Image (tube, rainbow, N blue to C red; front, side):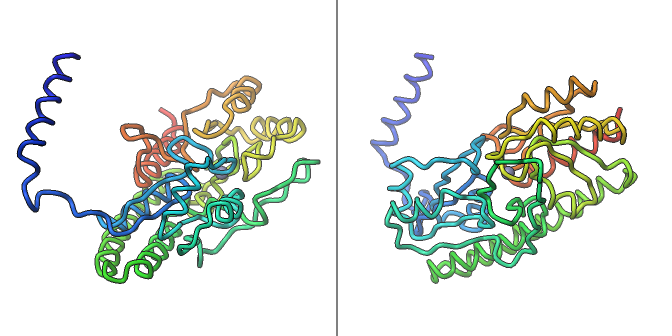
Length: 309
Ligand code: ZN
């Protein structure tokens, strides 16, 4: 440890003496951007490349539904030229943050133009208020919608920094090609599984877009926002449904309370088949450090659990 630190000190000293060679330094970022959550931050970095300095508000593993911005977040927002948000009621805390920070830059809602799904109405929620509005915000779970996001991000960056526009369009084109390939790979993975077997239990209702795009039925005890609590009646009904329809794929999500899924697992005798990533990436080195990795991980985990050993 000490030895390594010593080496680092030497290295830093050497750098200080000589300085980095001219031209070897990465170009300084031209645009300061903020993205509201980690998945969106990945998209903005893909399109912005070296030219854009991206700060993410709800970081890896954090739940953007119930995020609570700090004064330092407000300062970051105030200093940004562009602010990217998902929209569709995902970031209920945004209007207040925009106001309190005095943000004067450009606000880009990246879901503009996607075919939004209606949030499923759950009458058994009783008193629970749905702050997320009338739409299901998790549109990025359909890769074709992610492609729409990328186009909107390129438009937004071009408006904020016209000089870099060719670069943004180029990056967007390259990344879109990767996303199209990913979309094909997900379809391919599901094609081997009969449509009647494609039923999955997750903790909160984050996969309706994925389900619609790739032909999978998702059932969840919690609504589209993690703000609302699952009702005892809803959970009991779900347990009956799992038993009667012989559903075997039960999953925990990284941002949700695992206890509920644990309880359902105990009462149905099904062991949770792994972790799905819906609203947040993992830190670097985790199984979902990028959007592409997240979608691959979820698809492999889901199809693996349903297909069985
Ligand atoms: Zn969610």
